[in-house]
Length: 203
Image (cartoon, rainbow, N blue to C red; front, side):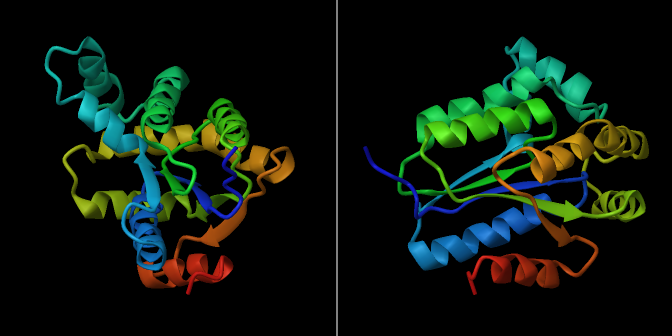
């Protein structure tokens, strides 16, 4: 059996607007510079959902557009797990590093990821929590001007953080064997990036 003990596996969690996507992309570039193109399995939950909405004949895509992206509500756990699980099945190779952006948002998702990391013999698993306040996240989301970032949608998206994501943070802190690493997200993009790469000796 091919072991994957040398690979890094990063899981970015935090409020909407905390910079998970930005930091994931920056870290991906660092890993690819060091280990080569194609050395990183990268998955962003939001990309999966947006892709579903581009398929007009797909009923699920219509529901995702209406009930998740336009409204800012949390997607069902089953749908989120399906999104990343099928990518694991179709794309993961043992020599690849891994970056998950925007999942898990719930304890159920976190436990499913932990279980699958064990299945894939992934030993260096690092949940990274980009810790920002509600106010910080709201201002950032309003400022970026994306099409699905209306004030109402943003408020809905931020509202499920204390209900779901805070419990996920607690799970990683107290129960998971993959212990949480907190990063202050209320800094410049470059300073956050430096904090991340320094924490893992990737400079």
